[in-house]
Length: 97
Image (cartoon, rainbow, N blue to C red; front, side, top):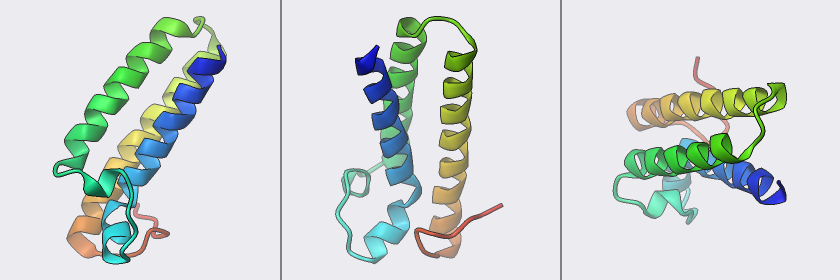
């Protein structure tokens, strides 16, 4: 169970890293995602692999549903943030709605 919770935390970090991709590059911060040639494609593979692992490993209950729902929503909003920052610029702290 601990390994699955750590996997969920790692997924959260990958998603967050991707959302700040353009701001990090402009400010000279070196991260895993901003070294990738196609970060959105890489993140998609990471998310798919982690979701498969989490769905298969966590017991089916409301807690799992809440965790997976949160991670999915976070993933989708950070993809949007990544695209908006590519288009408009901004800082890592910007919120796009």
